[in-house]
Picture 1 (tube, rainbow, N blue to C red):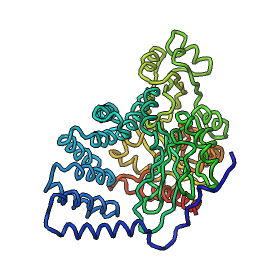
Picture 2 (tube, one colour):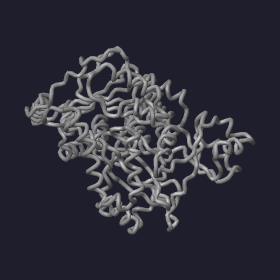
Picture 3 (cartoon, rainbow, N blue to C red):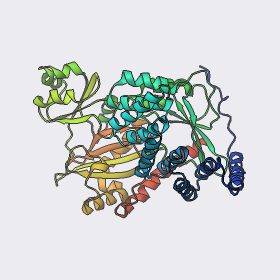
Length: 497
């Protein structure tokens, strides 16, 4: 398909006030005047509109006070509860948002929206059965509720029921595959087109695509009508990150990108080369990198009495790791100590094919497992965390970092001096990995062997990059996180301009 620049028509940002923002402020003044009048039947609805508008203008404290005042006066007002829940979610007060949505359901059990909102929060927290119950409740009320189909599709995808997931995702995104997110800036934004996959495996971009600077239009690549004109944009950020899970979406993204001359962050062709198998093969050939042996095996080949012999033929012995492709954060990922444990491990995992992976022992001299994460952003390396734990499946949120001051001191040293901590051999290996990956935005999770080699756990685009919690114990992490976040924002900003 011939490339054109027809869709890349957004004007460059200017210092002039943004017209929609001026309209919002004018409407706020109108609402203030209306609410100064004696109360009437429309007062609560107008007050909710005003509170939601304050939130849209990013006056969060004023918006929160306005919602609290409304709900004191009208505690069962559905729009008040629903919009207040949305504000609390944006503020990161997820537990409070859950309570507000639960209150909305208690007073309005036949309104599907509150069920959907509570389901979305449960899904984001990994509470899949609770989320499924909420989405199914919404669809029982309204079988055509698009957001409920989208949510249930995401849950079923996570649970490995891909056929059912795709059926719901197709219904949920039909004619709804292009959505422009709210923009809260006072000046004209940088318009960005963000491509995602309907079934997950996407890069979390919210921490660095600030809605005070970037106007983000999300395109669900695997469900968008290819004949629909692309919205105005100055950059495409391909957030489809998992090559194992998102093959159809990456193919669709390539077709979409062929229709525009805008620059692209993380071209789909580069992401396609980052499947776990391909990454282990490519990076394992690099000096200083130890990548695990692995094989993608049919479920049936791992269930029978010859499974151990089948694995042995490709050099895999026990203990080993078994995982369903396309999942992250430790989901559907197990340690198999012996051949006798294999049948139960296979039965516990979804999917017709499973990855059998050599177990790389990343324990230090103290017997603790270590997992380092370094981001590769616009050609530079950014250390972002070190997690230390007693269990082989090391994730920061399940590690011992909060309880162990000596572990936090070790992480602080890594963030302050990556090369000094890792050594020259592993640092050079990271540089080679960055160059071979070829991603504008990605990351590497790894350990260090006692010989100083880099033990590769994974390297791909789907690495989460978030600021550390407000907990004072983690204050030392904030500068490193801020550097990486600004690098991602700066890359997007400079390419869009």
